[in-house]
Structures are given as C-alpha cells and as structure tokens.
Image (cartoon, rainbow over all chains, first blue to last red; front, side):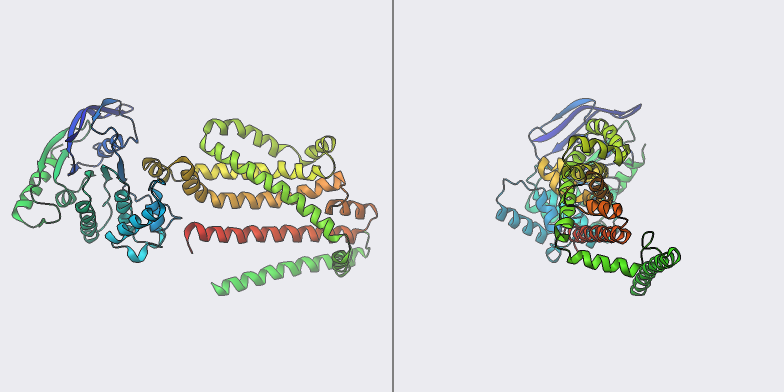
Length: 237
Length: 253
C-alpha cells in the first residue's frame, strides 16, 4: 500500500510553490524529500499534516491516518518535564498507568532515563530533539512527518540522533516523510530519496537506497556513488 | 550578587529614613499637630489603633471588601481575558468597554455607585471596576503572546481544547496574570478607600479617615493611611510569594 499525492497545487500570493505535484510514499518506509531551502518541502509537509490547506489536489490514503510531527524546533512545553511533554500528547482515554509505562519506555529508548524529571531549559539542543522524537513515537500514529529535525546540530549529534531515531523506528515501523536539504542526512536515514527542484516544485530524480538504514557506511564506494548522484541532482536548478 | 543585594537593601532603608527625616523636619517647621503631627506621635497613634477594640472589624471590613472585589475581578478578568485573547472578534468588542471603564474618573464611578448601591457595596463595586480592566487586558495580552508553535503542536497531536487551555495557555500567561493582579491590587486598595470615604459604611478604614479628618485629627488620618499602606504591602508580598510558588511549578526550580 502506498500513500499518493495527486495534482497538488499551492501558491502564496503570486508565488507558485506546488503545481500539479505528484508523489508516492510507500508505507512503513522512510522517504526523504531532499531539496534546497525555499523549494517547498515544508509547505508539502504542512499540507500533508493538515496544517495548511492546498489550493487543490488529492491526498489519497491519508484519510483516517494518525500523524506525528517532529518539528524543526522541538516545540516542548517549557513548564513540563521530559516525562510531562511526552505524556501531554497521549490520549486521556489511555489508562494513566499505561500512559506512564509507555512514556518511561520511550524515555529509556532514547536514553534519557536520568532526565525524565528535567525541564527543557535544563537540556541540550540534542536532548530536546530526542524528546521530540520520543513524543512522535509515543503517539500511536501511522505516519511521522519530520521537518529538518537535525538542522543546526553538530555532525556527531546528528549521527547519534539518527541512530536513536532508527532504533525506535525498527521496533515500531511507521511511514516516515522526512524533509531536509542535507544530502548526508538523507543518505543515512532514508530508504528512498526524492530530489526536489526550486518552485514550482517538481521531482528531479528519486532513488532507493538498498542497504538497511543504520547499517550503512557513509565512506563505502556504493554510498559515495549515490551521494554524488544526489549532489548532482540537487545542483540542477 | 550578595554584595549588590546588601547594598540595595541599605539604599531601601536609607530611603525610608530620608522620608522620616523629611517628615520630622516639616513637623518641626510647622510646629502644629493640626498640619503635620510629629512622626513619633503618629506611630503611637498607630499602636493605639491596633489596640482599639474595633480595629480588627474596621481593617477587616476594608480587607474583606478588597478581597471580594479582587476575587470577582480576577475570575471575570481571567475568563473575559482568555476569550478576548483567543477571539479577535470578542477582543474588538470588549476593548472600547475596557478603555471607557479605565478612562472614567473614579470619583464619577463612586458618585453613581452611591446612588445605585448601599454604602457597604460601593467600595466593592469600585474595586471591581478599577481592577477588572487591568486583569482582563493583561490576560488577553498574555494569551496573544503564547508561542503559536506550541499551540500548533498541541492541535496537531489532537490534544483536546480543555487541556490546551490548562496545559499550554494558562502556564504561559501566569506572569501576565501576576503582573495584572499586582497592578490591580495596587490601584484597587486606593479606590476602595476612596469609596469608603465617600460612601461611609459603618466599618472601614476610609470611614475612620473621614471621621478623623472632620475633627482635624491629622495624626489619625496619617495613622490610618499607614495601616492602609501596610495592608497593601502585605498583599503585594503575598502576590509575590504566590508568583514564586507558581513560577517553581511552571518552569521547575
């Protein structure tokens, strides 16, 4: 089963961002939308997330699907602890002991056990983003949307966050739609990379990465070849 | 930091002593208890007032009126402020009303209230009208300052409206509520006492001030003023104490 976007159009005043845009997202895989800043990646994600309406077009297969969002800025409530922030998005229909257990388990999985009672102001940027990722997995969603969640983090931290994310994803597979302008992030995290052009956005190329995410060596000849192909595609405007 | 605090405290104390010295100099200059009484005589009067059998009832009545006015204004201001902060339409509707209430001279409100209400209710009504706009405006400003990203996150995760209000909006507007409550209390006490002076309820600091003024009992007028300042100071401290407690709950210590 795939999720399909057909004839999607979106303009902001006179600027046409999406024009008859079409794309398919295979379920339970990580798809990366790679493109330069301002190419309409976030607009596309926000339309899928129902945060902004499209001018026209169809989103097929998204009906009745639950969504999680890992925002670029972690958007944690400053007055709630790590535990409180994760619990906040859980349905009150879930019994409180089950909520608590689920939250604690996720905190453990992102290795924040000692920080469950800490407030966002007491955490580093990377830790805050880990909480945001744990919150996305806490919610029983079918699709996780991620808007450049690694932006502004140093290389080591990015690698760690990717590993934590993949650790969670491998135990609880969901469809992930991830946007970035960073080729290395796309290469390490996704099963499929779609390269987007400048607006009006069109697909320049797409490629599948056959090696399982988390087991890739960015220095291997195969990955370097894919990286070069992606870089060549990104530079075509 | 500690040295700075000590220096600040010393300057605070120096300021109080400066005021007392100025008072003493003026009292010596005029040399008349009917114009400016001696500070020590006034403090003696304050002590005498404390031992007066009616003192607790008099001060308590004023405090009770202040509290009733404050509590009504607080809840009314909180609810209308939240609605005005969320709904631009309601905000456009209520803003002229708030501006009008704030612009009407307190004395006009008192004169009208004297016609409409019994003497005990007049100060409460005045307190309500003077405090309510502060709280309402601060709360609606607070709501508008809430990070839209946090609200968007909560809406995205389908958190219900009640929990968005209690979990996102309310904690975010706490500093605005405290600031509004503090300003409202500061202005409210003055309005209540003016209301009591003019409406003359049986018990009230304003009533006692009016009686003292009639008999040119200047030291009693000042003594009651000092007691009113003390009450206002105690409530301000209580608000600050509450602010610290809420702040601890809000962002952690």
